Amino acid sequence: MTTIEDVARARLAPKSRENMIGAVMNHIRCQVLSGRTSIEYTAQSLGTSVRSLQREMNASGRNFRDMVSEARVERAIELLRDNQNTVTAISSTPGYSSSAHFARAFRKNVGLSPLEFRNRFPA
Image (cartoon, rainbow, N blue to C red; front, top):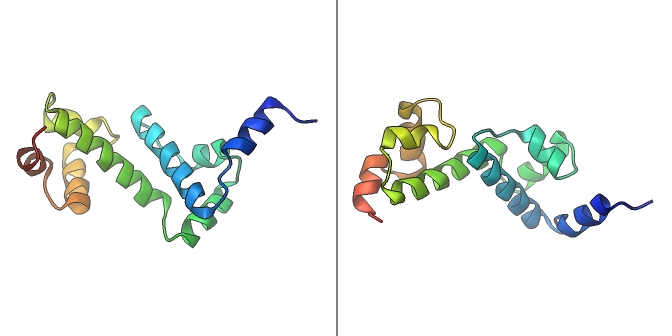
């Protein structure tokens, strides 16, 4: 017996490893917007186990933690370019526990502090 969910999953199922990583990244971006990320939820949403998802990511040279960090920084860049909020207010939006943690992660990924980025690349 085939359900509507089966048909939808088949249409959305990644056809290759690159598409799988793209699907994972898109799912992580959505989770970052909600403020909570979870590899368990990502695997469940893609219809696979956590271990199978980890194997696919490892085979492509990626890992969940780095992908979450990348998505958080992408979101932070969007918010910094908006220029409506302070850096401190922005730091909690993508899910960082403190503004210091946000600043370290941002500098590690972008090479600039959030304030330097905002000043160098105004909206």
